[in-house]
Image (tube, rainbow, N blue to C red; front, side, top):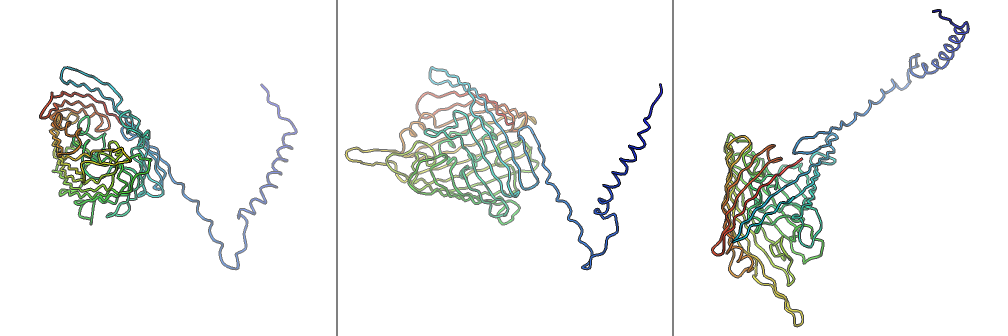
Length: 421
């Protein structure tokens, strides 16, 4: 095979080379490769260094969701949670069974502008999550600033810091559901401002406090009500240092004893709701509620103990309002109660649990509360947990014997899958 080169090729190459040299010569003069005269005012300043780009990272972890982070100024996390429950109840001569998606949650959180400026949003879509008269899915929606050791500031809608058992997140419970005493007497969520610290005065995280002031009518209240604030002060002592007392069970098998002691008091002035911040709304006026709480958390080598007492009293048992010839009457709910529960890890993934609780009602209070106490005021039960990914993915089961001074006892058995993604 013979190759052939056109006799015009050398001429074309010389032409292209001449054009390249003609264009490159001015560019070399402008780039500084040619000698330059020194400035009469001194050497020219060095060009500014290019700004470093903020690295963006995306991480994903089972139970913690997806987190997008751009340096220290911004992060965005997204996590979903589902709770599937089967409930069997035997009462008198009847048996009932219910299988449901108990709750479905979507949680968004992170920081903005600075690591200390954080935000959190939790939406709930389960049928049991909605209150009567409110179609809003908002559970939590707050912004907090945590720069200062002794004063952290939180603004928005979140748990009122009255008692430990209610502020423990639902995904971190040892039993399928919260205690009846807590469901009746807690303050749930409200819109307000909270000042707090887990390390007050820098005493090795032994002492903490939370001071809350809010509207007092609970979450997702979009109508106007009589003004009257809810104020709560809570103090916490951890004599052996900080630990995860906002989660039930001792999944870390603490090598040293861990102890948390808490006391709290609250006053809800002119609330329009039967249970202070929850329950149906009054139509005959408002009431003032006083609240007290005390709790203890202990953990050591896989054993955990949680005990709590709650007390609530209204300033009056009956509200009455007369308009013309019509009299409207409402009753308030005053009561108290306590519970004790414990758990023991028998293996790294399996825990056995037990609970006793008792609810009391004050004389003259809501007849429905009196009947609840009379027929279901005492509960004793036991359960188990299989932790497949800690509290983030677990199978739970429990059984409770529910009884009172009168009436037929109830037998309640539940099985639940609680999974965070």
